[in-house]
Image (cartoon, rainbow, N blue to C red; front, side, top):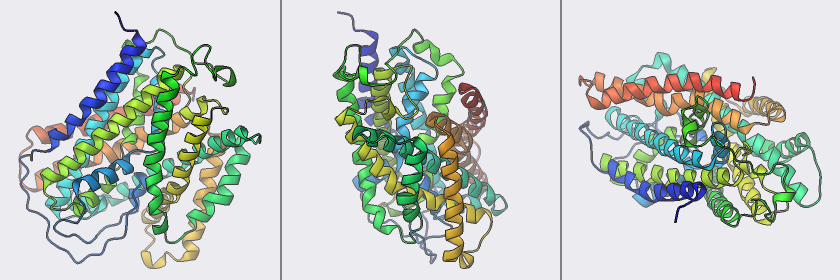
Length: 476
C-alpha cells in the first residue's frame, strides 16, 4: 500500500527526530585541540539568566573554577530550556514562504537539522576558545582572540538581537491576549491588548532590579512548549482542522495546500526559513557559562552536553514545524497559534502556557537589551544609577511597544533578525574567534579552520540575501 505525501512527510520528520539522538555521539570524541585547561581567576561574574537572547547580560570577567557542579543531564536540560522558545512558533510560516504542499516539509526538516547541527558546532567552538584563552564570557573570548578595539561589534549585535527578541515577544503577547479574551467573550483590539499587557505586566517586571525570583518560571517555558507540541499533534492527527473538521468553520483562514512541494526548496524564498533558523538556536552567549559550570569540564564531556541538547532541540523544532505546517499549509501564520480557533480549548490552554512563559522571560531578555545598549554607549557601571536604568527602561519599552503595534508579521521579524545579527552571533563571530585563536597559537588552518572560514562566509552571504528576501516576501 502506498503512503500519501502527507503521511510520508510526517514519517520522515518523526524518523529524523529519532535519529537525531545520534548527533550527540559526534561530539563525544575530542578533536586535535589540546589547549591547557583554564586556571582559576579572581574575577567575579555577574549572574546569567537561562534565556537565549538574555544571555547577552553576561559581562566580561567571571569566576572560573576547574569544573563546576552541574552534571551532564542537568546541563542538557538547562541548555534545551535556553534554546527552545516561542520563536519556534513562527517556523511553519517560514516553510509556507517557499512551499504549500505537504512534501515541502521534507526539505524543511533537513534544513532544521542542518542549521541546528551547524549551530551546535559553533556553540562547541566557543567553549573551546574559552578554554584555550581562559575566558569567562563570549565578549571576553572575542577581546582575547580578535581584540578589544572591535568589542563594540559584540555590544551592537547584542542590542539588535535582544531588541528583536523583545519585539517578537510583544507581538506574540498582543495577538495571544486578543485570542484569549475572545475565547471568554471579550473583544479588544490588538493595540488595546498590547498597551494593557505592557502597562500592567511588562513595565513593572522590567523595572525590577533583582530578577533572580523569576528563575523558577524558566521551567514553565519548556513545559509550555512540550504541551504545545502534544496539543498540535493531537489536532493534526485528529483532523480537527481538515475539511469537515470540528473547528474548520470557526477559523478565519481555512487550511490551504497547493503543488509547491519538496522541489520548491530550490527557490530563493527558502532562505526566509533559513534565516529564521539562524536565530532559532541562539544560546551562544551561554556557552562559556555551560562550559564553566559543568562538573569535570573536559571538552569531550562538554561536547556530549552540546550534542544531546541541540539534538533534542532539533527534534522539537521539527515536530512543531511539521504539525503546524501540515495542518494549515500555505496559510500558516507568523505565529502558528493564531491559526487555531478561539473555541478550541486545547489550544487556548496552549496559548496560556506560552503567554506565561513569555511574560516571565520578557524581563530577562529586556535586561540584555538595556545593558547591551549601555555597554554600546560606554556607560560605566558606577554611573548606572536607578534613575538612569529607569530612563532607559521606559525609552526602550516605548519604542518596542510602538513598533509592535504596527508590525503584525512575526515571521518577518524572526527572519530579518536572524538574517542580520543572528547569523553573526551564531555563525560568523564564533568562526572568526576559532580561526584567530588557531592563528594566535601558531597552528595551520587545517580542515576545521577552513570549515570555520566557510561557515563565516556562508553566514555573511546568507544574511545579506535572506534580509532582502524577507522584505520582498512582504512586499517591502
